[in-house]
Length: 451
Image (cartoon, rainbow, N blue to C red; front, side, top):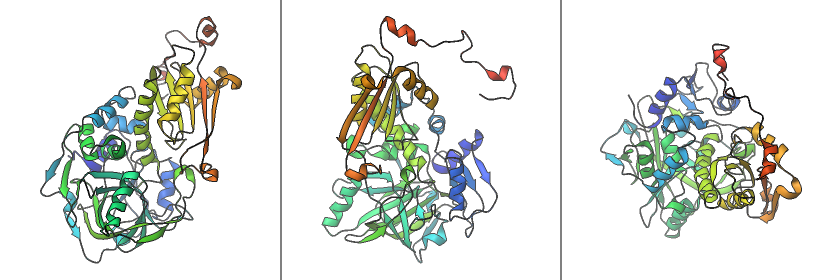
């Protein structure tokens, strides 16, 4: 039985009835992605028959919060503290001398499209894209490893364009380029929820090795192996590793690509990866994600740690939600235990200050379910007066990933205080309840019916 990476995750999903298998042949151009999109990337699907390839494809693995909670043995109430603890107390990894991911080693005549069934997702996408690749590089000065999910445009047989966006990764490449040296890079495919979540932690903010955060999250050392052609370490039980270099002073046009919020990204020159080696397991499974809920949800879970921390300095927080519909970065909802009349406004200030990406925030009382759009809308409808409860900050710095920000390079930010007033008047806002039956088990009355 597998313990780490993709196959272990698939076994867990299968055990709880979450993994769907598609036996119908699908075309990796448009069709495979369309199936994943139909289920809003919330349904893990194994495609056993992919046109033009013998390699199966799995996608939609980590598109639900509940998947993370189950795989990490946590729950909504404890997850933020579990993630905080892993960041604060990273644990050692374990280096192996050989590993399943190197059962097959390809160093000659590399043709990525022939090795793997790499999908094309949208009509105007410039090429096929690897969307689930976790990229690892080392800082040329300190040797610190950095991992992140990056989109990779297939340019030719053994060449890809890489969108390098995070400050630390950009600095690592630019530092090597300034010395006219290539930067070694590995792309990891076939991982689990722990590895994906750890990759979303900001090395720039926390100064931690994400592999060691992974070890802390999973409660055992992440098992690694040295790459075949470059000086990097990768998970021993991954499915596929693409090894290569980012040569200095070489750029290729990348994009367009349909990604965040359903829009096409910009067309621009970006660094390339020249592939030197591909290693993979026997009977390897290609991991993909329809752009790009899985990455963004994992990123949103880490943003919730930062949002909670920011708010908890100002008010007593019950829970926070960086919403999926808001791109897991633009919209936030927080429930607070309101003690003072200014708490709602203070929470707005804290939320908007937690990240430049947060554009709109709603603050509600602790009786509101922040994961229910109905409950949030109900709170806004019944507890908000626009002249008193809206906070608007014009012309603030926002995210370049948000299209309306690109119009002027600044963003208007909005906070909504949807908390009820304190004191005697708060009784007017008490909910009507059914004593003893608010959390009714409907299966008692209709066996087999789920809520």
